[in-house]
Amino acid sequence: MKFKTILAGVAGVLPACLIMIIAFLAIYSWPAIHFNGFGFVTSNTWNLGNLYSNPVVVGGTQVAPGAHYGIVFLIVGTLLSTLIALLVAVPVGVGAAVFLAEAVPGKLRIWLSFFVELLAAVPSVVFGLWGYVVVIPFLGHFLFPFLSRVLGFIPIFAGPSGSGYGLLTAGLVLALMIVPLIVATLRDALVAQPTAIREAVSALGATRFEVISKVVLPSVNRVLIGATILALGRAMGETMAVLMVSGNALNYLPQNVYAPISTMAAFIVSQLDSALQDPTGMAVKSLAEIALILSLLSLIVNFLARLVLALEAHGARRATI
Amino acid sequence: MAADALAAPAPVALSLQQGVPLRRRVYSAGGWILCGLALAILSAAMVWILALVFIRGLGALSPELFTTITQGTGGGLLNAIEGTAVLSFGALLLAIPFGVGAGIYVSEYRHGYWAPTIRLLSDILVGVPSIVLGYVGYVTMVEWLGWSFSVAAGSITVSVICLPYICRTTELALQQVPGDLREAAFALGCDEKRVIFRICLPAALPAILTGILLALAISVGETAPLLYTAGWSNYLWDGRLTQSPIGYLTYAIWTFISEPFESAHQLAYAAAFLVTTFVLIVHVVSRFVFERDRH
Image (cartoon, rainbow over all chains, first blue to last red; front, side, top):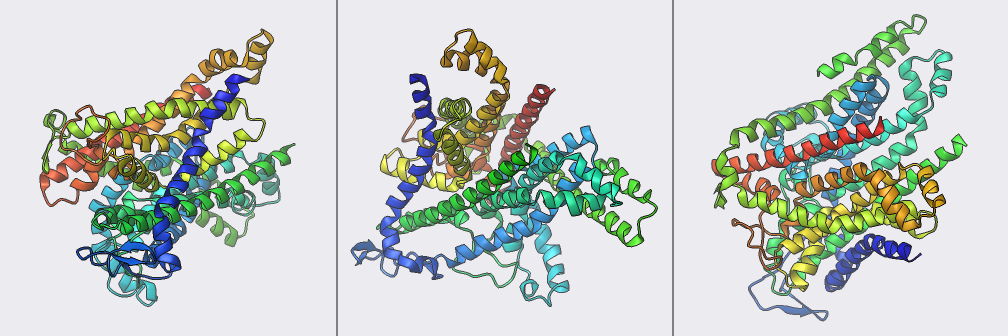
């Protein structure tokens, strides 16, 4: 009994970490939350103010004169890059999972799956290196000018095609980073679907692809939704790769898909050095507020994903009994 | 991809279904082609990344890399290699007891409310962006505790990232141990502690070690949580846990590739090669262990 209590205490370190992260961020950023108010998420100006003149007191807290913190451009950048990543990763992931589960024979499937899922093992900063050295020149010189010529009649694809750093590049690199999660989860779910269903539908005259696309795939849609939400959470919080390919825009809302952006996670890295120059500490505390918002978002997203996946597992267990 | 050529039989088999109307045959063949294309794109991207890292990385390797420290934008990577080893070792040292302990608890005492709660919260902890952990580490350890950029701050931050992975793999490993073994041990009069330490843990050890190895790969590949906790240093570690920054390989990749000097680029490629090779080797090795366990 005593041993169990000790273990329970050791295990409690995990939830304690989570709670401490949120609590520390909330406590530390409280003056910033108070100073920035609701304008933090509705205005689009991140301005540290004049760091070289004496701080002024606003609402009881010291800030640099002219300081104003608004992160609409970060929210937009995070949401749009995540959206592009999902728009690319979900279809590609589903296609690859279906092909791996249904068309690749046994031994080869294991090794090919392993190879593709190694994408998840590649460190974020190596993706960033690849994006920086190879993808950006390629996209900036060839694909983006081409896209803007061919798809220019669609507003978001029109306009100057930029240098290669930007929204679409970040979205594509993110897509590659989250797609293994979708492939792995979906492939396992597909392989686990009972053969009887396939045989029944085949017996009705369906082709093999119809069996999969019209019956097997719809039966795992909850798994796909769960995996997609998990992937969304991962894309939102991705830092290094985005930092290296997004162009790190400041106070700028993208007008087309080639425009530079920044995300909440990347912004924390790119701005900490300059925020530290603020003698009042309000800039660093405002960055903590971004971190707080980001961690609360990822909390909600991950909780939702686990809920969907747990419900699905529960349902599957009941169905087999 | 050669792999896709081998996988071709599926669409061929379809054409044998003579009675199917053309429209549906086209739909099916088109569907298979798109699915195969998706897989080909992913494989190609993986090959592309590996090619970049290996070709440029191998070209940048030299003996001096492993024997000299970084000097400005040139020199070697000895300080970063040592730093990555120290930080990862420290992170695992902290994460293993808590992670394995939590995994044992969640697996062996899973009836009740505490274990599922821990599992859920640990799954959520996995999802917390690593830069948030780095920032919290900066605020708490570097600022409040006054450790400044240091091995302790970096290792503790990375250990929080490793914790949930080790917990989860330990739990899964223990659940592979048949219940009969536990029952037999209990029937012979063992208490819970003995069953766990003498029966379950030895049986699950290879899988637990695999999980720890994967956590090591994660800690070697992390950058964001270290930027503002470990800092960077051109010198070898002086042995102090606090007050002295330390270098690490992923920082070299990030910062040296954007320098305008060829020598800096060479360092970045070499660092990328070392990190990626290590991570890949760990994954391949753990895959072999896992496969052997299953058969």
